[in-house]
Length: 128
Image (cartoon, rainbow, N blue to C red; front, side, top):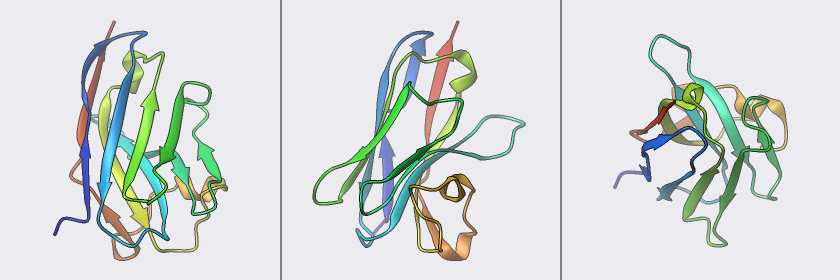
């Protein structure tokens, strides 16, 4: 069973919106987040949410993106609005079991593989 499966990516024009979803099949009591990686760039944290609902956002997406999850903890969402061409990247859903807390900026640092689960990614392309 694949622990994390993303969906909802696609191509939009600048200013448009997309909602990414992640079906979660791991323990629900983990800090969850969205990371992205553009060609030639390092993987970066976009948003995170902890079990108490606390959230963190990268400065580049604050006010435009919203992370949330359903009450059962089986689906993670990323609502993206006012999209910009620089948001173009592969987006990954991540569940981490290290010491990072979703309400703290350390949750936006990519976790090591041995303390996290990663989805396969979904592509978001924003055209100008």
